[in-house]
Image (cartoon, rainbow over all chains, first blue to last red; front, side):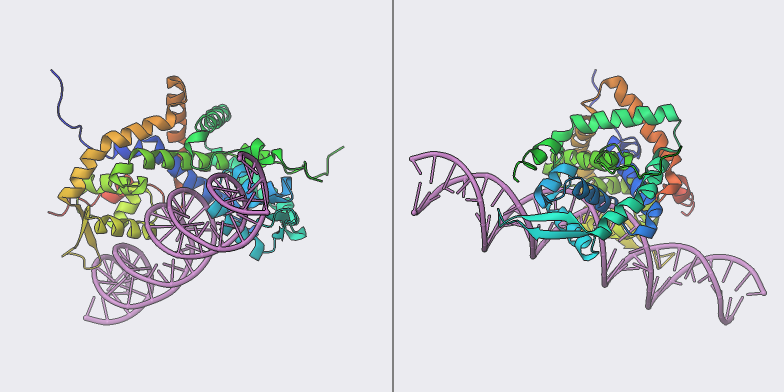
Length: 170
Length: 170
DNA sequence: TCGAGATTGACAGCATACTTACAATGTGGC
DNA sequence: GCCACATTGTAAGTATGCTGTCAATCTCGA
């Protein structure tokens, strides 16, 4: 009494799939971010990088990638662009010749200060259409899901690990 | 009695931002999808394109982009790759010389049939860590949010508009 | 019917995102 | 001290994702 037929493939296989919804939402989020931050010419990834370098001056690229969970290769190009725009400086480490230490320039620190209101507006706009209670629920579930799926991503978030050694050396 | 100080910028500005969580979740979702579908050598975007062409044979690239809400320029490359892999055929329209009509090949239709179990497994894995009730809640809120934010994205979903004309001509 | 404006697919250019590979360098075991 | 192994930054290759622009083509109004 079993059904041997393959179920028909409809657009529901796309529209109701979590993966599709995550992709759509990501695109919407980027679109809103870029729109709100247009005057500052900064992308979401570049913003996250600036914040991390600001929080951890002298961090290297590999550790930075672990702290914000972005790919190491990709991050190389991101930093290069930030360097071209004079927001970030790369200085060779004396202790380890392989490593280049990252620092914000004055200009980079100023940009970070100035852009925060735009970023906050963007983040608020993404959830705006939901009722306040639903925003909280969504954010909580998403935080939980991202955390529980951490190891499933190609570049797991390793905030503490990456920072363990910082501050040890004088 | 007001506080004129700029609040300090910490990593919270990244970790708790909806935009960051959406990006992380998207990356995790793609990672899981690619892993589950490794044997079929198909990406999430390519899968969505195949489903849409399967559902709407003879659709053109511009309408396809509206149906799955992907960028028109990007989709050109996606289709090209699907054509190279012999999953899709492009045929010039007789009625409108600008348009190229899209069809699945036998091989493309077969792939779509075969890959569905892997896709279903992937979609399930993305939400696996959550309790069943929470999965439903998250999906419902996300569906709602994507829908309400539709116009905010660069390429809004226009499923019905795009299909209105299909089936009219013999 | 004719010409302004829209549409379509293609292309160039930039920015993520990931894979593999590689040279320079560090580290630890022996 | 030396060598196997790991780490770091970089590069090449592929795949989205977006902005423009362009030529060919279509449409519609005057």
